Each structure stands twice: as C-alpha cells, then as structure tokens.
Image (cartoon, rainbow, N blue to C red):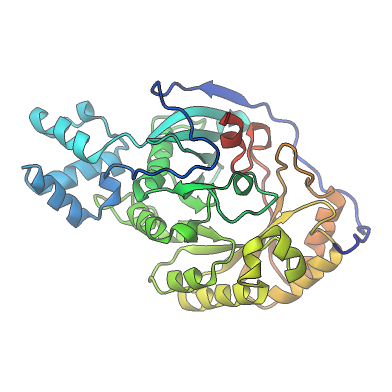
Length: 395
C-alpha cells in the first residue's frame, strides 16, 4: 500500500445519531438456513414474474383458463402488489385459487426487518423457498423512493471488505425472486406503512447482495418485468434503474447491446491495478483500463452517464494521490463518482475514511472536473452493509 498523505482541510460534517427499530416477522416453521456456503440444488418454482406476458397467457391456457386471465393476474401482482387469491375478486372464485397456486407461489418470506431514519429506511432479510438468505432495502427520500435489491444469495466475487463477499456464493436468484423484492417494497409503500403517506417505487438499484452481471439472464429478465408497462410489468422507467458491476467486461458489452437505457455503475474502489487486484479480485482478469473502456463504450451506445462507485477505506484507498489518479482517468468522461464511506463489517480490519481525508478526496476529484457525490450513509445502525443482516442470522 502506498503511504497516506495528510489532508489539506478539515472534516466534513456528519449526520446526528439515528435510532433503529426492529420489527419481528414470523416465517413458516421448519425452514432452517443452509449450512455454510452450500449451494441450493433445487430451482425455485415457476412464478408469473419469471414469464413474459405471452408465456403467461400460454400458462393459464394450459390450466384451462382463457388467455385474458393472464392479464388479470398480472394486474393484481404488478399493479396492486398482491398474490393473495382472496383479493382477486374479478376472477371467478373457482379459478382464482388454482391460478394463484400455479403462478404465484410463495418464494420469499420476510424473516427480519429493521427500520431507521424515522421509518423511511427499511431493510428486510428474506428467506427463500430453499432457506437461502437475501436482503433488500427501501429508502424514501423527499423526491424519490429507491429499492436496493439483491440478485444472488451471497456473492462469488470475494471482495474482502464486503460482508456478502466474505460469505461466498450460495446461488443465483430467479427473475421472480428479484422482482418479488420490489413488489414487496411497493406493497409496503402503497399501503402507507412508510412515513410520508402512500407512494410508488420510483428507482431500483441492483446494488444489494451479489454481482448482477454474473446472473445475467435473470437480471435482464427482471429489468424487463420491472420496466414494462402494466400488465406485462411494473412500469418503472428504465432510466430509473441502475445495474452495478465489479467489472465483468464481456457482460457490460452484452448489456450495451440490449437496447436498454438503464444506468451502469462500476464498483471500482481503486484507480490502480496494484490495489484493485486486492480489493476487487476480478481485476486480475479485467483491469482498470479495460473496465473503464467498457463503461465508456456503454455510454457511447446508450447515451447514459456511467457511475463509478468508490468505497472510501481508511488509509487503504483514500490517499490524495489516488484521488488525483482517479480524476485524471475520468476527466472528460460522461461519468459521476459516488464516494461511499465504508460501512465496516464486524471483525473487519477496515473502516471508513477520516472526514478530512474524505473531504480532500472530493476536492481533488472536483479539481479534475469530475462530478462527485458522497453517498448518504443510511443504514449504518441497521447492519446497512450488504450481507451484514444475513450474516447475523447464520448459525
């Protein structure tokens, strides 16, 4: 590691303390967590959200129902956020239970929920049908509501400062398991259980557990379900969806060719290959220059600015010279840097940068003309780092 240089200015003001509240949620008995990192051997049952609308029509036809039942069922799930047969009163009583059982199986059970920020941040620990643990976070701001969702149970990228990376990969999530996290958040919001009154999910970020582009097919299908208009999907704008990646270059290129307008976020965390090889091990396969070149190509194809996610870690990657290097790499690009004060995980040797070092990092980037934001550190008091809540639930 290169030596740290003293910062030139004083600390950045930090927010006052916030008190978390835990909501105890009860799941079905007999559903124990998987042992260690053992991968699940069964696939989730087929769900309506796994299928495009045409395939839903075929599925209901196979059940002896007219094709338009697929649209009715889809409007309940994607528009009214319900999978409860008794609430689908526009369907014949004899049909609704059979349709719900066949196409709306229970995939996620809320095992634990923590809230903070006066109820506007809600983190949920979900147990999947086979006992895997995943997390999602709902964050309500004055001008938007963002859902942060998981794409895998665990993660195989092995970034050592990340709680999810430390846990390893259990399995990929299905399309419906990903979409179900957003539908659950939309249900909570629509029913007025989040301060601020009823509302709608406006933004979705694939920044929860897992590497989204390592589960490419399910993530792509989930994006389509989330952004297609009713009854095909939830009708969220593609421009309000962000897909994060540690830098799987071929998958970035593939995503650019999909004709979508989602935003790409690159989890860089270091501007030099020597350090990034340690912080983001996949860098040994696709190095910084290749990752940024792929991000620039994505921007050229889509017209969307890309984001660079950079977790500031005390005395590791927060040196002023690294800010200058990052600024020189991004100068002139249609890019934006999100600096993330590290949310330390239990037992980790790494912690967040000093406020003064953070402030100097910001100033150095701005001196290169690179737009930069320090991310709101929501969720620190509710095991906010990805994987912390899941880790605390393991034996």
